[in-house]
Amino acid sequence: MGRRTAIILLISALIIWAFALWTFRSTLGISYNPIAFWSTLQTSVNEGLSISQLVPALLMLVLIVATPLVIWNVLEEWSATYTLTDEGLRFKSLGVVVTYPWTGITRIHRQDNDSNEPVDELLLAEDYTQQIRNPIMRFLHGQAYGRKRLPIYAGLEQRDELLSEIQSRIGSSDT
Image (cartoon, rainbow, N blue to C red; front, side, top):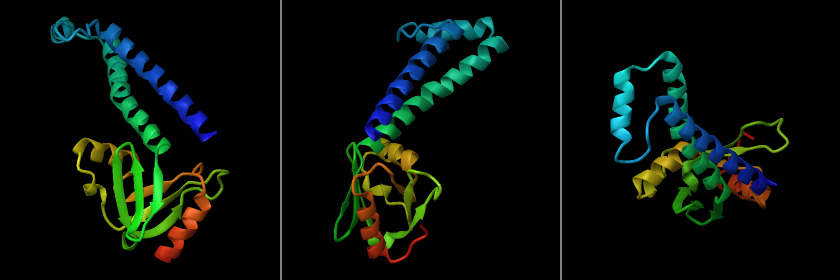
């Protein structure tokens, strides 16, 4: 069910992104042709933008930038794996590999106790994303999860066993 939800979210995000790109272009009257883009944008700005053009264009620009970040978040969550090692909890997803040492995990925090599908997160003592060498991947992972938190999602296989083992290794909890 989680994969189906992720696919629906991805398709919806792509539709929203395509709509935002189309609306941005048509609102400002610009061309996405790399050769003509700057000249058409400059012409549009020189002719003067009305508020009825400016507000939708800014909203669409926000969607153009934010939607790929949402898509990354969904894909990273979808492909996330957690592995228990002697050194700590190893997280892998889309080329991102981070090991969170047991001493660096301060506690497990349940985000919503009343939810049918609770989300727990590991609260971390410090930022371990420096283990990610690629700065773009580091930024994307940090904005998806945060730098001092790591969610353990509800749809994860053997989630309760994973949380129990993490709990036994770190010793304290807030769940």
